[in-house]
Length: 156
Image (cartoon, rainbow, N blue to C red; front, side, top):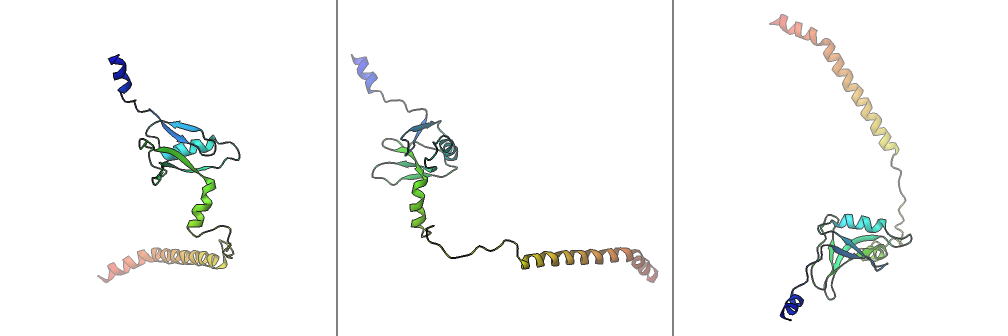
């Protein structure tokens, strides 16, 4: 009897994996401890059904607490009792864009300009002319270098 009480009082061993809950499907994906968030996201996004929103980042959430967001190079960590890892999906990206004041539905009225213009082509042609001019000057100096050396030696 005493042995059963001691066995039941022993703390449960910590799991040897990290569970990330997908919001749309409700399924949990398991990863080894020490896995980077970017690797977990790429695997989650590969296994999504067509039409499911893509995972943007992984966050640790607990009721009443501010979520902890994992960057791409972050290692996934279990923060303990009450914390769970879940993905933030692409349907929430509109909120992020609106908060920054960059609502994509509002047009800025700017017209895209061509990458290569007349000014750019003129600068490239001017650079070629200057390169050939400089090369010509060096060629003339090198052709006349022996004469210059003889002139200097004869005057000494």
